[in-house]
Image 1 (tube, rainbow, N blue to C red):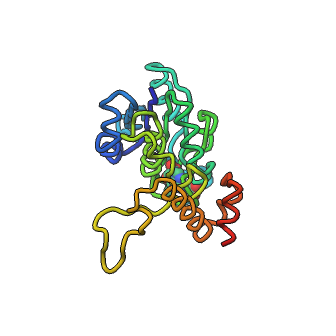
Image 2: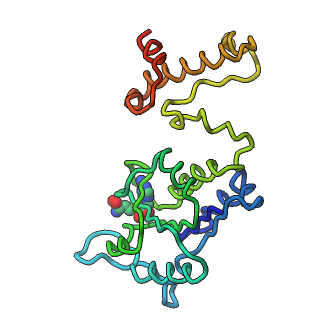
Image 3: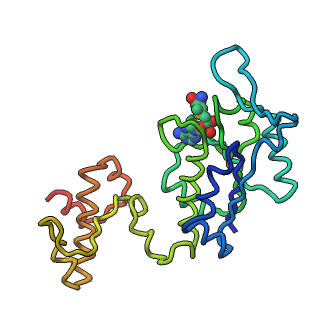
Length: 239
Ligand code: SAM
C-alpha cells in the first residue's frame, strides 16, 4: 500500500487533508495510508525545541539535523522506508509526471516539512529526494505535502470513483484539459456547445481533442513540444 509518513511541526494542519474527502475515503478503504508525526517528539529536550540559530548569523532559525535523524531512525524501526523527501524551494519541481512516477512506485514515503529558514544542510545526507512545488516560498512545507499527497493518491488505482477520470486531466495527456459543461444548458445567454448535446461520441471526442489543443496553444504553448501530438493534431493547430 502507498504510505506517506509526514514529519511536521504542525500535524493538525494536515489532518483534514488526510482524513476528509477522497484521501480519507482511500485510507478507510486501505488504498493509501497517511501517518502524521510531530517532529517535536524527537527534539531530545524537555522544551521540545527542534531548531537553533544559524551558524554565521542571520535571521531566523534552522531545524536541527540530529532531530531529523532521530525521527527517521524511529520511523525506520517501525517499518522500512523507501524514500525520504525533503520539501524545499531549492528542490526538483514536482510535476504531474512526478505524481505518476510516485504512484507507480508506491511504497513508504517519508515527507519532511520544513519551517523557519528550513533544515540544516546536513539533512541532505538523510534524504533520497529534495522536492519543490514551484518557484515561490511558503511559510512551511505542510501545504506542499498536502499538494503532493493529493496529486499522488488520486492516481492510485481505485482511489477515484471512475478510473478513466484522471486520464484526460490537464497534463496527463500532455495537454490542458478540454472545457466541461453541466446543467443548466443556457446560463447568462451562453449555451452549452451543440456537439456535447448531440450524442455523437466520435464527434464529441474530436471536439474535445481540438479544444484541448486550442487551450494549450493559447495558455501553455510551452507544453506542446512534449505533448506527444498525433499527425491530425498539427492540422488542428494550424487552423
Ligand atoms: N530559506 C528557505 C529558502 O529560501 O530556500 C525557505 C524556507 S521556507 C520559509 C520554510 C519551509 O517551507 C521549507 O523548509 C520547506 O519545507 C517549505 N517550503 C516553502 N516553499 C516551498 C516550496 N516552494 N516547495 C516545497 N517546500 C516549500
